[in-house]
Image (cartoon, rainbow, N blue to C red):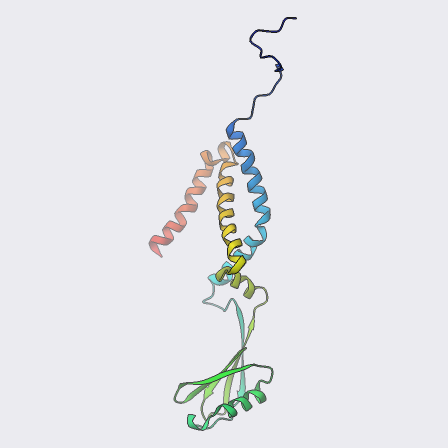
Length: 204
C-alpha cells in the first residue's frame, strides 16, 4: 500500500498527541502537593501545637511550669542589714539545687532573690517567703521556641516552610476539578476562608 502523502515519513498513525499544558501543570501540581505535604507534615504539627498553646497564654504559661513553695525566711526587717553573703547562705540552705544569680529590692519592704530556675521573694522581716520554681514544659517549650524565635539554620528552614505552604495552597486549588474544584463549590470555601481573617482585621 502506498504511503499517504499527508502522513509525515517515520511517524506512526497511532502516535499519541503531546499532553496539553494544563495536564503538565496538574501533573506537577500533584507531585509538589504530595511531596511537600510529606516533607512539612512534622513542621505543621509543631506549629499547630505551639499555636494552640500560645493562643491561650492568658490562661496558662505555655512554655514553663511554675511551682510555688512556701519557705521559712531568715532576713531582718531592714535592707541595710542584708548582704550578698547572707543571701548566698540562705539559698544554699533553702534551695541547694538552684543556681544563685543576684538579689534586689523591688520595694523598701520587699526583697527578691533571682535564681537560674526561678526566684524567691517576700517581705523583709517576715516569717516566710515564696519560692517560685520554674521548669520547662516537655516538648511545648521547645516547640514554642522554634515557633516564636527562629534563628540560625532553623530560620532558613522556617522560611522554606512558609514558601512550601504557599505552594501547597496553590497546588491544592489547582488539583480538584469539576463541581468540587475552584470553579465549582471550591470558590465558596476559599471566599469564606478569606473573609474570616479580613473580619478579624476590621472588628478585633
